[in-house]
Length: 170
Image (cartoon, rainbow, N blue to C red):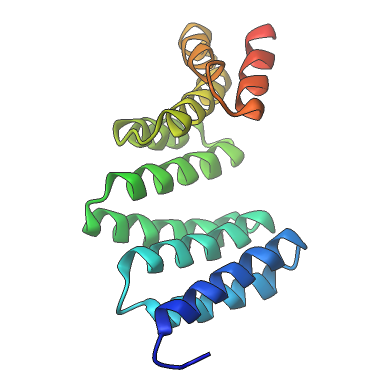
Protein backbone atom coordinates (compact mmCIF):
# COMPACT_ATOMS: atom_id res chain seq x y z
CA UNK A 1 0.00 0.00 0.00
CA UNK A 2 1.20 3.50 -0.65
CA UNK A 3 2.27 5.21 2.54
CA UNK A 4 0.67 8.49 1.43
CA UNK A 5 -2.91 7.32 1.94
CA UNK A 6 -2.76 6.61 5.68
CA UNK A 7 -6.55 6.84 6.10
CA UNK A 8 -7.07 4.06 3.56
CA UNK A 9 -4.42 1.91 5.27
CA UNK A 10 -6.12 2.62 8.63
CA UNK A 11 -9.37 1.34 7.11
CA UNK A 12 -7.60 -1.85 6.05
CA UNK A 13 -6.27 -2.37 9.57
CA UNK A 14 -9.78 -1.87 10.92
CA UNK A 15 -11.19 -4.52 8.58
CA UNK A 16 -8.33 -6.88 9.44
CA UNK A 17 -9.14 -6.34 13.11
CA UNK A 18 -12.76 -7.26 12.41
CA UNK A 19 -11.65 -10.45 10.65
CA UNK A 20 -9.44 -11.44 13.59
CA UNK A 21 -12.25 -10.72 16.05
CA UNK A 22 -14.54 -13.03 14.09
CA UNK A 23 -11.94 -15.76 14.63
CA UNK A 24 -11.71 -14.98 18.37
CA UNK A 25 -8.13 -13.71 17.93
CA UNK A 26 -8.81 -10.66 20.06
CA UNK A 27 -5.25 -9.65 20.93
CA UNK A 28 -4.28 -9.77 17.24
CA UNK A 29 -7.42 -7.79 16.37
CA UNK A 30 -6.53 -5.25 19.04
CA UNK A 31 -3.09 -4.81 17.48
CA UNK A 32 -4.66 -4.17 14.07
CA UNK A 33 -7.01 -1.57 15.57
CA UNK A 34 -4.06 0.12 17.30
CA UNK A 35 -2.11 0.30 14.06
CA UNK A 36 -5.13 1.82 12.35
CA UNK A 37 -5.62 4.29 15.18
CA UNK A 38 -1.98 5.39 15.02
CA UNK A 39 -2.39 6.16 11.32
CA UNK A 40 -5.54 8.23 11.64
CA UNK A 41 -5.37 9.72 15.14
CA UNK A 42 -4.47 13.21 13.97
CA UNK A 43 -6.22 13.26 10.59
CA UNK A 44 -9.65 11.71 11.12
CA UNK A 45 -11.41 12.06 14.46
CA UNK A 46 -14.40 9.89 13.57
CA UNK A 47 -12.19 7.03 12.37
CA UNK A 48 -10.13 7.41 15.55
CA UNK A 49 -13.35 7.10 17.54
CA UNK A 50 -14.18 3.76 15.91
CA UNK A 51 -10.62 2.44 16.25
CA UNK A 52 -10.54 3.14 19.99
CA UNK A 53 -14.06 1.80 20.42
CA UNK A 54 -13.01 -1.39 18.61
CA UNK A 55 -10.02 -1.74 20.94
CA UNK A 56 -12.40 -1.43 23.89
CA UNK A 57 -14.68 -4.03 22.31
CA UNK A 58 -11.81 -6.54 22.09
CA UNK A 59 -11.29 -6.17 25.83
CA UNK A 60 -15.02 -6.60 26.37
CA UNK A 61 -14.99 -9.81 24.31
CA UNK A 62 -12.18 -11.12 26.51
CA UNK A 63 -14.21 -10.10 29.59
CA UNK A 64 -11.55 -7.57 30.65
CA UNK A 65 -14.23 -5.09 31.62
CA UNK A 66 -12.02 -2.55 33.40
CA UNK A 67 -9.76 -2.26 30.35
CA UNK A 68 -12.78 -1.92 28.07
CA UNK A 69 -14.15 0.85 30.28
CA UNK A 70 -10.87 2.78 30.07
CA UNK A 71 -11.17 2.87 26.29
CA UNK A 72 -14.90 3.57 26.35
CA UNK A 73 -14.37 6.60 28.59
CA UNK A 74 -11.70 7.91 26.24
CA UNK A 75 -14.07 7.42 23.31
CA UNK A 76 -16.88 9.17 25.22
CA UNK A 77 -14.64 12.23 25.65
CA UNK A 78 -13.83 12.16 21.95
CA UNK A 79 -17.51 11.89 20.95
CA UNK A 80 -18.41 14.74 23.30
CA UNK A 81 -15.72 16.94 21.77
CA UNK A 82 -16.99 16.13 18.27
CA UNK A 83 -20.59 16.79 19.39
CA UNK A 84 -21.92 14.02 17.17
CA UNK A 85 -25.10 12.49 18.48
CA UNK A 86 -24.61 9.24 16.53
CA UNK A 87 -21.22 8.66 18.18
CA UNK A 88 -22.55 9.66 21.61
CA UNK A 89 -25.47 7.27 21.18
CA UNK A 90 -23.12 4.40 20.27
CA UNK A 91 -20.64 4.83 23.11
CA UNK A 92 -23.26 5.53 25.78
CA UNK A 93 -25.03 2.33 24.72
CA UNK A 94 -21.75 0.41 24.97
CA UNK A 95 -20.98 1.79 28.42
CA UNK A 96 -24.52 0.95 29.60
CA UNK A 97 -24.12 -2.64 28.38
CA UNK A 98 -20.76 -2.94 30.13
CA UNK A 99 -22.15 -1.65 33.44
CA UNK A 100 -25.14 -3.95 33.09
CA UNK A 101 -22.76 -6.88 32.63
CA UNK A 102 -21.06 -5.87 35.90
CA UNK A 103 -24.45 -5.70 37.70
CA UNK A 104 -23.93 -1.96 38.19
CA UNK A 105 -27.51 -1.21 37.24
CA UNK A 106 -27.73 2.41 38.37
CA UNK A 107 -24.77 3.40 36.19
CA UNK A 108 -26.13 1.26 33.35
CA UNK A 109 -29.51 2.99 33.57
CA UNK A 110 -27.84 6.41 33.57
CA UNK A 111 -25.89 5.68 30.37
CA UNK A 112 -28.72 3.98 28.50
CA UNK A 113 -30.96 6.95 29.29
CA UNK A 114 -28.21 9.25 28.04
CA UNK A 115 -27.92 7.15 24.87
CA UNK A 116 -31.65 7.38 24.28
CA UNK A 117 -31.43 11.16 24.52
CA UNK A 118 -29.09 11.02 21.51
CA UNK A 119 -31.50 8.73 19.70
CA UNK A 120 -30.11 7.60 16.39
CA UNK A 121 -32.00 5.44 13.90
CA UNK A 122 -35.22 3.54 14.68
CA UNK A 123 -33.23 0.29 14.65
CA UNK A 124 -30.73 1.62 17.19
CA UNK A 125 -33.51 3.16 19.26
CA UNK A 126 -35.41 -0.13 19.62
CA UNK A 127 -32.19 -1.94 20.62
CA UNK A 128 -31.47 0.69 23.26
CA UNK A 129 -35.06 0.46 24.52
CA UNK A 130 -34.76 -3.32 24.84
CA UNK A 131 -31.49 -2.86 26.74
CA UNK A 132 -33.12 -0.27 29.00
CA UNK A 133 -35.92 -2.77 29.65
CA UNK A 134 -33.33 -5.36 30.70
CA UNK A 135 -31.67 -2.89 33.05
CA UNK A 136 -34.96 -1.75 34.58
CA UNK A 137 -35.96 -5.39 34.97
CA UNK A 138 -32.76 -5.99 36.91
CA UNK A 139 -33.65 -2.96 39.05
CA UNK A 140 -37.06 -4.58 39.77
CA UNK A 141 -38.92 -1.77 38.00
CA UNK A 142 -41.22 -4.14 36.14
CA UNK A 143 -43.77 -1.65 34.81
CA UNK A 144 -41.08 0.57 33.30
CA UNK A 145 -39.20 -2.45 31.95
CA UNK A 146 -42.35 -3.70 30.20
CA UNK A 147 -42.80 -0.31 28.54
CA UNK A 148 -39.30 -0.46 27.04
CA UNK A 149 -39.49 -4.15 26.08
CA UNK A 150 -42.66 -3.39 24.13
CA UNK A 151 -40.71 -0.82 22.12
CA UNK A 152 -37.88 -3.34 21.65
CA UNK A 153 -40.41 -5.90 20.41
CA UNK A 154 -41.10 -3.58 17.45
CA UNK A 155 -37.49 -3.86 16.27
CA UNK A 156 -36.64 -4.97 12.76
CA UNK A 157 -33.71 -6.91 14.29
CA UNK A 158 -34.98 -10.44 14.94
CA UNK A 159 -32.64 -10.92 17.92
CA UNK A 160 -33.79 -7.73 19.64
CA UNK A 161 -37.41 -8.63 18.91
CA UNK A 162 -37.00 -12.19 20.25
CA UNK A 163 -35.17 -11.00 23.37
CA UNK A 164 -37.84 -8.39 24.09
CA UNK A 165 -40.67 -10.88 23.63
CA UNK A 166 -38.86 -13.40 25.83
CA UNK A 167 -38.56 -10.81 28.61
CA UNK A 168 -42.21 -9.81 28.19
CA UNK A 169 -43.21 -13.48 28.42
CA UNK A 170 -41.29 -13.95 31.65
